[in-house]
Length: 417
Image (cartoon, rainbow, N blue to C red; front, side, top):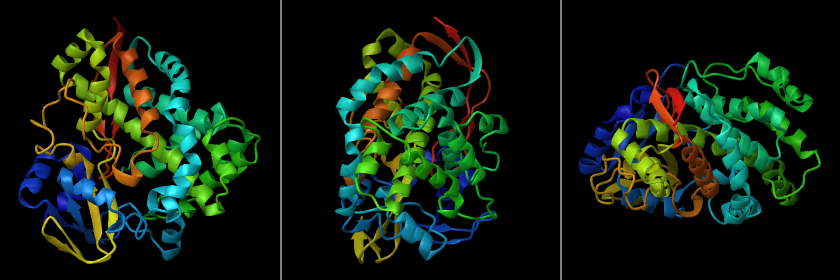
């Protein structure tokens, strides 16, 4: 039993791609136990899915593999009340309820809206970098946080709250993940300072995605909703969409955290991948027209999210493996993206690889709503970086997480070419 697939410490040094490859060949749907770790209690275990075709099958058949029954994280919510609360989040719903919520906010993420934002995003990206050494994780995090604040109507002074909330949610398995500093609190709007004052003190082991753990974020969301808002912001769409209170809070959570963490992981991961493959970086500098393909290859090679969970709705068989109703089924995007049945020589980083079937944005009804916006931010950052010489200035440090494929630190030295 490949328990290390579940263990967060496995990912402190690298994603276990060799183990994924072995399991794809020998046990493409296999049972993974969930042992207790630190303050976290043991879980019942789950079926892990490693092949590309099987991952896509699970993601496109919500009638068999539900996002709603147990939500989409491996760890079960702590109480029935916590489960009921997260079940009204769009990420944790199945059609037709999921489709209704998606339609409400989709207008804020259309290609037309993203195109209108691209010049502003590019200008912001161009201002990120300066000569000398920096932690690229911190520098690059500014763009998705700023973009989300802009799209959601969050005042610029409060954008650090988005960073803080995402850190608390995605870094909960990492003992030294940072939170908002006292100095940052002083610069917040009065609305932001009131939200920070509402931050709960959590007992060890409390699920950081529970409603109680995020009381400050929801207090801020309701205060923001009282402000006059114009245009096509996500907040405007939510206010006009007739959401219930729980739907509104969960939608705010989804965009404030999920829309932040993926780029905060993916952009530094993309740069590190290029630095570790200098011939491909030189190739991209020589032919910038390859950038769009290179971005897709970065996303394939360094998927920001490594897995998502579903729950079997009935007794069924997947890849010859009997699965019972109610069992957890976890699809591994990181494994699917290295499946040689779909990607020839999958462990080779090739910026000219035809843009194809990576599942880093998901698949099926839950395909990432913000994919256009994510690609625009990738494009802006790496277009600017091609004007700089970049080299590692110290060892990268990975996030301890079995869910997010992230870096805590990426020290680099920048010099304009």
